[in-house]
Image (cartoon, rainbow, N blue to C red):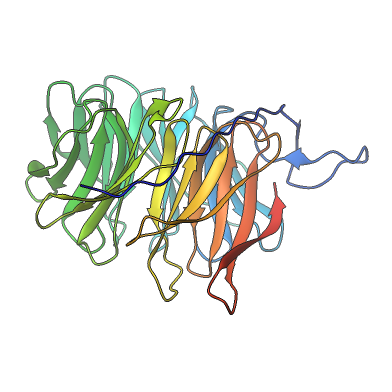
Length: 344
């Protein structure tokens, strides 16, 4: 069985701030690039982050230079998930309006832009979206129990597969493989072979809804996070992709774990980062399950996702105070500390 860490209680709520371009107003208040809760954030290149939120907008932001690069509007309901393809320089969004869309920056920089492509066919909220490494195929999942595979350029649905009670919560592409990982409200974690869009692996069911997943760079492991409350559930699970066996469990969050990632920051040990609706971000040692760092952003409310970068930076999205940027550093004694960079 997996190893457990002690549980830490936490609770923090905040208030929405003003709407702007990530700067400070004349009254000294932070102007946020989203005017409502941010639902998801992901990397979009070095120093760049893509985020979508309840305000139905998609934002590309250069946080190293504190510059708004692009704001897209067009969804009729809140954006649930986003992803980015560097090879084709395109942003993708999933929404409660039952659609997924592709966006590209107009010539000349910031300006209004229609979606470059729309992917229509789901019957309910689209809750998962992932693009392959070449930017040619897009995979989406929905609460309608279906997973769809699309041609990115044409918008055509190549394949679709449905499974009873498979209410999709998240989808991610396995690095360099014809496979996507998917979590579900039926408490399962699945791997789909994108050549056939058939299940290739189904892991043993957990006790609670699985909310998020990530596949290791070598393709040998998968992380999944659990729904929960008051410390029940709320764990992150490390699975072996080759044997489907549970390797470790990471305990310590008090509410639903909204995101879990293998950190691309290469240090002497493999690290995992998690964000939670309890308002905390934690960094874990993968092999020992030791929590190396736990912190919160005052007034942030529930933390909805995080975006990890190879240099040790993290962008963390919140329900109340926008996106927060921090950087991990390793001291000479081997301990991990964080440096707050800013917010927007």
